Image 1 (cartoon, rainbow, N blue to C red):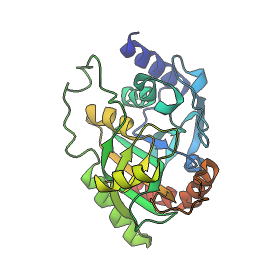
Image 2 (cartoon, one colour):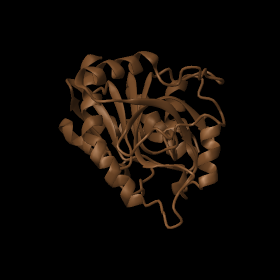
Image 3 (cartoon, rainbow, N blue to C red):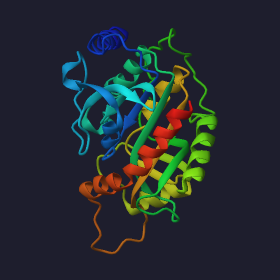
Length: 274
């Protein structure tokens, strides 16, 4: 399949639906975090299923829409739910929405997710700025390179933009809520990690673990788009559980919802400052 044509066809469909608006920022809203979309004004909602070639999000807490409108005075395009590798889609489909955002001309990408806190100092409801990542998913740039978008071997020294991280820290300090800052580990899922895997990820430098985000960041950085990433810690991913403990997907979404207000405030104020 010609993926460049697939990207262009999907972007043309979205552009027609939004009457030629030019989104300045792309936002990816993860598990339970879709309510940030409620803050977007003058919304145009585009279900993924109505876009040619698009996959449909099946994950818990992911509604599966593009939402285009105004947030903090800027035109934004938000993914109300993302596509995951564990849903059975190839990487080209997983990152197709981000490729479409890039085709539409976004200047920044904000990504969010729900994650397990590997770091012993993290607690449920904490917000963690992603300063770096460890990728255990297939790289979405495998295959023919799109030379007109970016280089064959893109630099990943600073996958998350230092100036955006500093901006987030200044805003959080001013409005008075704490932020963690750490390394996000992305694995395939959909099974939750074992206690031994949590311990391994901590040993190799991880602070939080999830099943998404990194492929989106890679294709954005391939195109030279600055990225800001944030995780909501929805469970304490330790290796010393009681014998009857179980991870539960509904609990993860509920914990993400509880932290969504703080994340919405932070991202909105960051966008105001850009």
